[in-house]
Image (cartoon, rainbow, N blue to C red; front, side, top):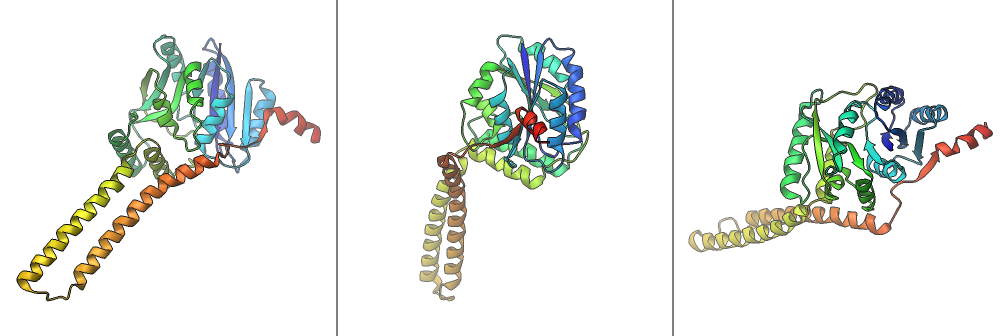
Length: 316
């Protein structure tokens, strides 16, 4: 039996050796052959050099280096597509995903009724308060307006059966949001709870705005509510305009037209224009997603793998 460990990496030269050392301890305690698949997502530091060295010294270490930064979602898909294990896990290289939890996860997934064991944080210690606040708000909003339920605090870190991984690979859309896809494909998933951990080395590439953009991607990919907002907003705008017109007519008949009508006209124009721009923006986001899907561009492009190491050695 084999376990494929998928590890996306972006500027993680310091974290990789620490991660691999911790995983080796877990490897010794599990009755599984480990297969490591590191994804170098266009790193600017020496991440690729570290992966080359690791693959050269360990036959079970594989890496895929992208031609540029395609994002974590592309890295996850590349790892899943190249994994050959009977079980597959997705982990962050910064050790915020505790490797020792794999022991309990493996024991639980032996139940034939369980297809996946995920992990969720019960605290956000070490995170900026504003980030924690918006993260909780995101889960509340997406679970109210979306058709796919997402667990608050759930990480990408999970152990999955081969069957579930094959189902995820059937979802070949270009615009990917893995947290939603993991849930959308179904299968029985249970969650282990743990306290938040901080990075062991390096700095996160996620800031407030990138997380906000990522959240918006999730809402658009798994909810039609924004389009409904555009529809109902347009109806509301028309209704308010009719009420406003009736009010102006009645006021003119009773009190006369003292202001010649231009203030009310300006307010109505500004209101309707603002509503139109907002709704066009919402619709435009969905159209942009359709545009990217119809292009049928590859989700990622590979520049190098560990299979090219021999060629590189010969060139040197």
